Length: 145
Image (cartoon, rainbow, N blue to C red; front, side, top):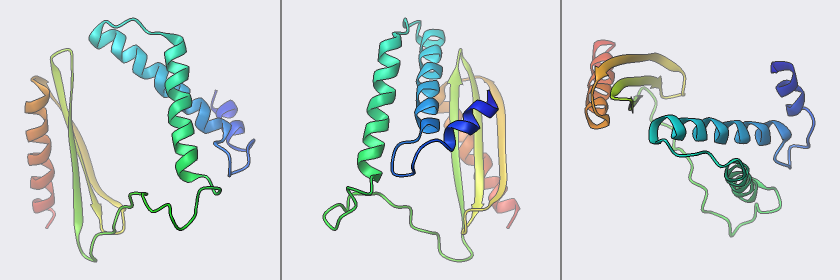
């Protein structure tokens, strides 16, 4: 499968949404439908998976197409780099079947990862999971100076 996916990335001009991106969009939608089945007991609709993947791909292409890059198109959201010497802590909590987990990543101002961590915190809600994720990330950042 890896070889097949790798071959897809070499098959399209960069101006198009390449075949690898299309395959990954479809895989993502299948994964999401599976999760919705497990978590929300909602029946997957294959045509919906393809439709959502096509819509996301088309939106991406519209935003990033070289045909659309003109002076009037300034709605792109760009990440502003951190000031030199700063670090950034990103954190998140997740919840599935009453089990919660936390994760954080600490990055240097240039984007390189300083530290990343994840933890299973057992039976909790999503709201509870967010707080320790923030706490653990900040504590690690302070501990690292």
